[in-house]
Image (cartoon, rainbow, N blue to C red; front, top):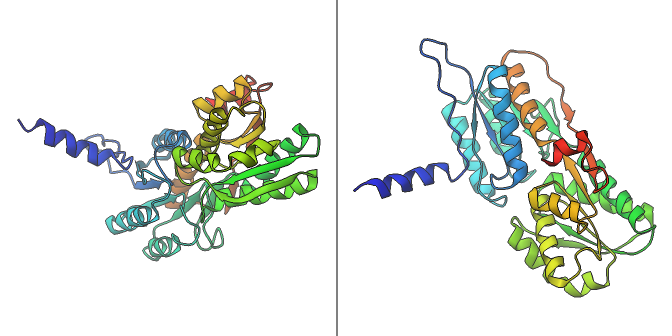
Length: 320
């Protein structure tokens, strides 16, 4: 029997989130093939971006190939994916850089070959409209400020706060963390931890949070700057018996985080619009291929979700 080896090859082919191009109608001209490369493929956030990108493909008249690293700490694999698609002569590239510096040479190589590049979700060093065609993302600094202001309101403008950062080199989360620290200072909060990193997975984040057990017991508030860090912190607070006792503001949503929001063990989530991010990235690539002008920066927005507003249509759409 050769079934087991064949299944193994199929699993390997899908391990990096590879999404095959839509089959062409016989006799129809081939559509331009564009690649969308996220930071990772396991988080709910990226699955929503993928949904948006695929939804936009047919109206935009392109084929979308979705492929990214399994984990959000594999810079080498992400660089390799960009190089692979550039070598294949992809028509356009949308990229969420794992590192705002490390991906610069690969993007420059794509542009040198005439391949339009849209950066989404997380910034790349350079000037939008010059070093790459467009930047599609949340205003992450503003998102962090929203989180800090909300936590300040929950704590009445006083208290000790722990911030668990995400990962070195991730521009989006670094901007959120900077915005959060600025808002905490304005709100009169004392940030007692601001230099600890969660790492790329929920398990790593939980471990790092548990290492802060004594500090968390003495704190009144907590902030985490992405989905996996928020989920890991939630698990740690549950294990320590602090869930629901420490005010907790996170970033992004997933079914466990939304359940915690509704249950009161997370006070608020700053939620983005990842589906719109994916849709716009693909649409902008299609516009670039059609030689249409595109805006250098597109803000896809963010809102504060709480138990009180979770069922409002505009919020509920982002939590699903």
